[in-house]
Amino acid sequence: MIYTCTITPSIDYTTYLSSFLPGELNRTKEVYYYPGGKGINVSRVLKRLGEDNTALGFVGGFTGEYIKHFLEQENIKTEFIDTEEITRINVKIKADQETELNGPGPMIAEHQQQELLSKLQHLQKGDWLVLAGSLPETIPLSFYKEIANLCRQLGIKIVLDTSGPAFNELVKERPFLIKPNEHELGDLFDTTISSKEEAIHYAKKLNELGVENIIVSLGGDGAIFVSNDTILEAKAPKGKVVNTVGAGDSLLSGFISSYAKGQGVPTAFRYGVASGSATAFQTDLCKKEDVEALIDQVQLKSIKE
Ligand SMILES: Nc1ncnc2c1ncn2[C@@H]1O[C@H](COP(=O)(O)OP(=O)(O)O)[C@@H](O)[C@H]1O
Ligand SMILES: O=P(O)(O)OC[C@H]1O[C@](O)(COP(=O)(O)O)[C@@H](O)[C@@H]1O
Image (tube, rainbow, N blue to C red; front, side, top):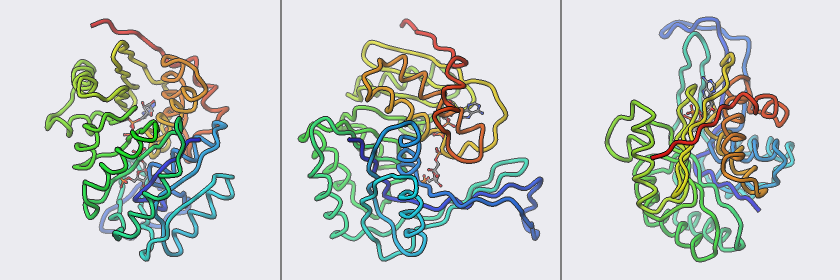
């Protein structure tokens, strides 16, 4: 079974305008209320690609209820822990430019952290845990390490798509797979990544530290895959970009859904990149048929060191 865990979910209030004027009254006609947060996006895309999964994490208040209901309507199993706080609403303004306003994550009390650990103790050998989205600094780093240790003891594949100080610590715990974008990869090494060669160089460093598989997403330029014995470059399909929110989450979901079925890395990586682009080309997250329509347009190249 695949589990996702979103510590900081959101409702993504997404609106499209022909132009957006800061400091003025802007009236908008096209609005969407999507459940968001990276792990939740991964759960939704996995389900659309045919993978049953369970969404874990923390939600609260009327926004939390909305998220639970939305996911249940999509037949995604949820086992959220209730917070006393209202889950945040993130604002995504799509005009000539994309502007985002992400609220702070919730305060998670000690007993709520323990509740999550108890749930994780029931995971089985061979399960996957995708820990995705921002990890609040109000939770001690030791908690995230406890999650990583538990997964290692239970034989669970841990996948990370996060950022910040907790990510810096968690990469040392030898996760199975991580998916930074080029900025997140740069932040890990206190540098700026400005070329594919630099992305490969730093991904290799992470591999040497014990991260088994690294996907560096490069937006419209595609992505890089690095493991012990493989370096692949994928060029993304070209198309009209509508909404890139969740593109990275979709790349990760596409990769996991294919890999978990026993398909090899090149097939899984190609499927992942097609999923990321399929999401970038529409308002909501991609569906299976959108991904399959793009697969043949993903150009894969093996890179020799
Ligand atoms: N402009 C774009 N054109 C085509 N594909 C895109 C575009 N932006 C993102 N994608 C697809 O989505 C994937 C993830 O995008 P990226 O923006 O790097 O992730 P994140 O959302 O994590 O920052 C890319 O590898 C690519 O497949
Ligand atoms: O936890 P963070 O870093 O604030 O990000 C949350 C936001 O990221 C998203 O999960 C989208 O992520 P990506 O665009 O990076 O794929 C949104 O749904 C959500 O609003």
